[in-house]
Length: 89
Image (cartoon, rainbow, N blue to C red; front, side):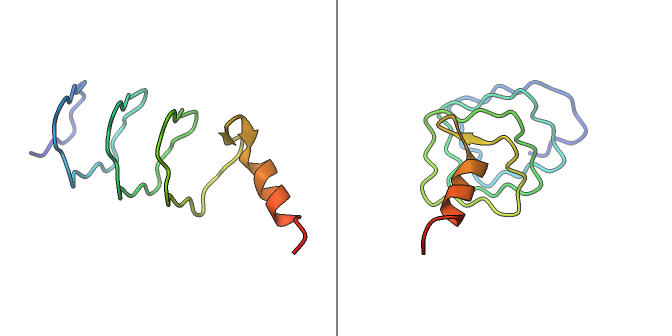
């Protein structure tokens, strides 16, 4: 199924949309509950002000990203990186 140039609110439940592609799509204020994004790729995605709760980030990788103000368990990531970089080697 291809959805192009449409403004609709989608309610997807108990569905398998494996290998779906979202390109130049607006998902502002969307909600993802009990969703499996295993091995998904996010490129040029705006996740600013997003909240992740009870997520599995095992082996997740973040590269070439703006981490300004990002927190993990209320600790600024910039502080964590700075502490890591200044540790004795």
